[in-house]
Length: 357
Ligand code: 2NL
Image (cartoon, rainbow, N blue to C red):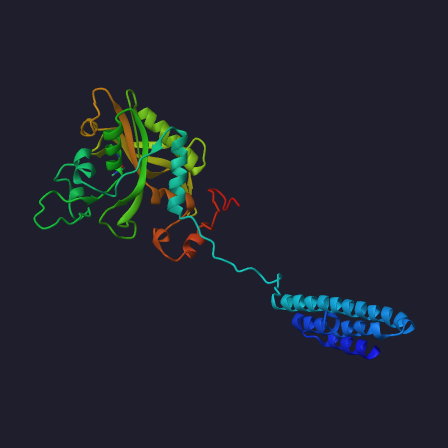
């Protein structure tokens, strides 16, 4: 019986997997296993022999069963250890870094401008970048012979052969958006129209596409005094200086009468431009009272309604606010320029002293 025990305990110890273990179990303690055979022999024994052999066989059976259970557990532990070795992960490795995106200064400034005018009750109007020459020129009292309409200055779309209608244009300002707004919604109105505009111009200070924001306020008693207040509020908020002064110089645009070019107060010392202080002036926009012909073209009765309009370059006020000296920073695909001017992702630079964060 000791031989039997040694045989099975050593086979159990050597078993490589659960299947081998099951074979051993059947051979040892299964119904037809060796221990069962020995049990059957008990009947042929004398009562004395039986008294020692019976309990011994039962003990052997128990011992083999617990050796099987222990080995089964050990095999499972070993399998888990093996799996853990394979799935090992170094949680101390540095993460994979991704390049951060940045908001474009033109987008940021458009949002800033929009928020400031929104506080004064202006909503945003949008419209097509390709429009008819009616909306872009005629409705704005720009006559057919006006130099702005020459192919030198304006991008004209192609017409199909034999189509003699006047060609569409790439809008040269966002005024057509405001004409369309008045035509659709009537007066009173208080809107700004930011967006891309196009002119056939390309040199150090001009790009064929640039960004503009126009504003329009129409009601029964809107005057240039309202215009001056709105613009001074805007410049104070945008350039972050209280009490910034503006200067209105008489000018001429076909779509406004009277018309004024507007300068803001600035100083220029030691090559440092400061806005909202000193006694220098910087031209920033054109404006005026909307011409009665323009109101009529948009189906608004000039005997009842009147209002102001203005237009300014977003690129230009962005350069002034963030100290960007060169238009190329907006168009250069080399993002180092933007980073140089403080447009890191989610960083909002401020005037008068570097980054706010
Ligand atoms: C500039 C400044 C300006 C307007 C734009 C405008 C729009 C409508 C009616 C009347 Cl719908 N005016 N916009 C007015 C004055 C100036 O732009 O320097 N333009 C050449």
